[in-house]
Image (tube, rainbow, N blue to C red; front, top):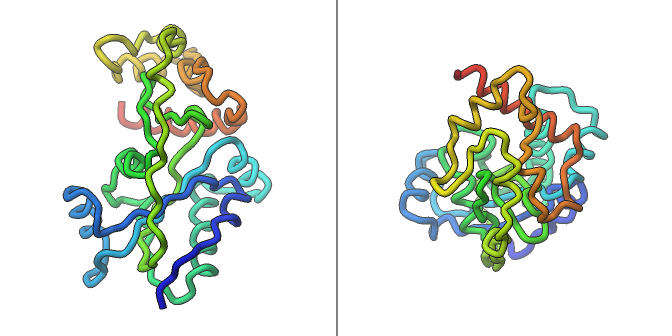
Length: 233
């Protein structure tokens, strides 16, 4: 029986408050090929359910759950979405694509959903939320939900002449030539760098400041990324 409706409220209640349903058969060619390589034989078409968080609520839910793991945000988010799916769609097949090794680009999916607008500091931005949102879970599912129209929102960066993010970057990693990743990484690797547990450019962006992540959320996220950077130096 076709499934024509889903209640995303239980996810929104814990801070997983961004949702989009994409038609798996209408993906761009390269993305469709990547998807086929991630699914068992015989699983074609279907839908992509993209789940994100915006604002500080998800981190507060993770802390309240008392989850102890190497990546509590991912583990909490996957557990919440998988349980939600089982309740909403009993008997329907699904497969977790992200977190995982499936090479579906999150920002590419975000652009299809209308979520992703690039910033000089290389994090996506939305008018309501600023850069304080993230991609948390991607599922393939054999559901028949209405496909979500792309969010129609213009990038706030287009009207930002002052670019306080550029001025705030101590590594001077942003400029007319684009983003200089090696400058950013070299600055973050310094033992006394102010960028080890936060991004000063991101902090300086005025858009969506009321939705800013909690300080300990920021510290967790950036220290985790720094550990990855140090392992591959």
